[in-house]
Image (tube, rainbow, N blue to C red):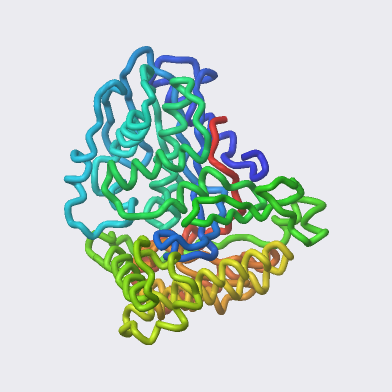
Length: 448
């Protein structure tokens, strides 16, 4: 992650000292996993339907310092959560133990499990995933994990970053050579099977595949990965057409910053069954469209419906299902248009598509709540903002915006002021210096 100069050396030194004190090792022996948070500029709520999505990491995330233990023991401490986690890597990890903590049936937000259940479940889930794929682990770790304060419930996929961090640490300690695409599947096992969450693979894919200066695009139906990238010409990459961007990665920093604007909402999705019900509604819409077109034997996900079939038979969908399907097909189109805009360096058009994505999430997917909708509307009006939308499901957390670098501070100040007017109580619960953060693009997860 050298391109973004994150994390800063004082952070690394502090964690190395902490792990050294826990383990009795020299601080120079401590290894560090850096696992970034991600944003999703375009492709909201369509990964579980096999849609095309885009993502980018930011220069904030999870830092896990560790040393291999002398045996199978795992000892973990956290900068966010109390207590210690202890277990052995040769113990069989059973997903039912974690699933009992998620028995409401309506949970999709993995941050909920991270916060409300035993925070060590992600480490145990990493062992579960590695064991299930036939890896024999003999080496535990002594580790200390910490994320950026206040970002663990913000819709930035902090929990996927945690899962990836543990995978990389256990693999490093046991000298396992696992590819990024394999780790995407391993983290899916942590979230879907071990923790019992119903989410797609966008988050871990972004965290593991992103590269600084690139917009990572993923076809969730075929799980084929493409990057709209700078001048490395391979079958997986194509050039951004802007000559200015092709000359110098640092131009990206000069062109835009990423704003994270926090609502102050901490309410978990466990109390709102909306996410899983919307997934079910998308599948119901698919069944009707496939049946109307005489197509049989396909999985009921909207990517199995051609746009022409949708246009021909959408009148057969009742209003709610029509809105869900309309969001999918319009969002999928926005992603493809957004890739072209990004590749040409057209941040104005790219931003307009992000804002349209946010509006469709509100009107068609019917996600969001009043504070986040208000925050979205404020960001859209903020000076220098190219585009804005929710980060995550839109039931709590934050909104993201792409903003002109020269006007980032002005936009942040405007957003703080206007949000405080409409939500004084929520705004009062946020540190004013952290209500709106100005970030840069990030890099992929790695051991440094």
